[in-house]
Length: 92
Image (cartoon, rainbow, N blue to C red; front, side, top):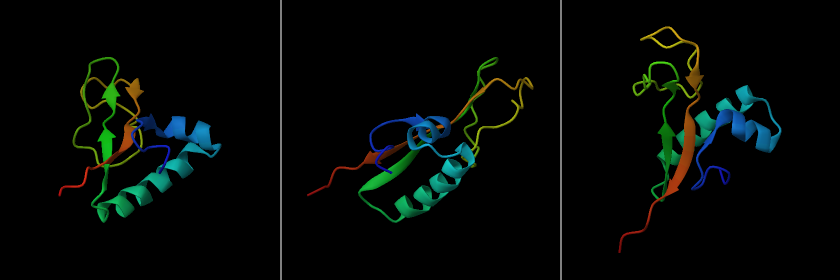
């Protein structure tokens, strides 16, 4: 979680930093999402995947993996989703 705190990264970037397979990172991200749902001081942010060819944004997608193909233009040139953990400021 510390690698995502205030730094936006993709699953492949995290895999390179940790030295683990990307699929394993995606499984851990699902656990991070569940853990942070109960944490009022931090929240998980997702920058969705985008098609490089037509610009389609996968806003409604809830899976944390990169889509295989764009539903608009059928291109397989898809930018992976990026993740970040934001620390919320405490209110007095």
